[in-house]
Length: 311
Image (cartoon, rainbow, N blue to C red; front, side, top):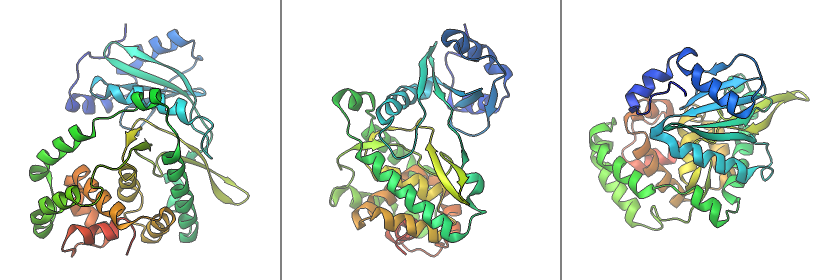
């Protein structure tokens, strides 16, 4: 049996995540033996929420008990989208359990993370790729789900919103005028228009330049694959706006506006996405506002207009 701890807190997993190959070796060897994976040395990928390792032409992801649902949803999403998007997605080779932990083995795809070349590209090229990224996001949201897939990809959004709402007063780091207006803004989003009650679609959850692979072809950078579906779930499409806006486009206003225009975002989209970003990244707003050049914003709609490329 693997030596992975049966119970691990978030803090303990963060500490474990920083460790090199040795603590993971017995679990990886068990996965190799179960599924006749190729010989060779495992190599750790440094990034990612979970612990991910490369082995020849496959990747092995070890998922701790606190995120066990992510592994099930990732495998379900990858099987659902295979061959249905304009970019390749990883094929599921195997999945299973190691005690309270879960794992997913996927085939590796060619290319390097778009993030590695993003800032070396001219602005016009970044804008072009941002538009392609927006089109891919629309493709993901348009994937049709059968009842079985919908059940596999279900997620407790009301529970998450409750937890985030309770944590917000303690964790929010923003200028006083924005802190004081946060509760009223969230209540307005909740009560006005579709609020948080929009029809759900398939979400990737993290469709940004970390999870897009690319290659140079005919003298320009070309997207080659969409990877890492560990945050995939069924949910409101506006949730998929916050990771690209916060993690990719915050220092890139031209690409941000190109991405937003290609998506055709409505005022309702931006209002809801701003509320979700407020709840999801409460302790990052000082840095976010600085990167956006929006330190003087007087309210959350003004913040959202900048964050989601309307201004």
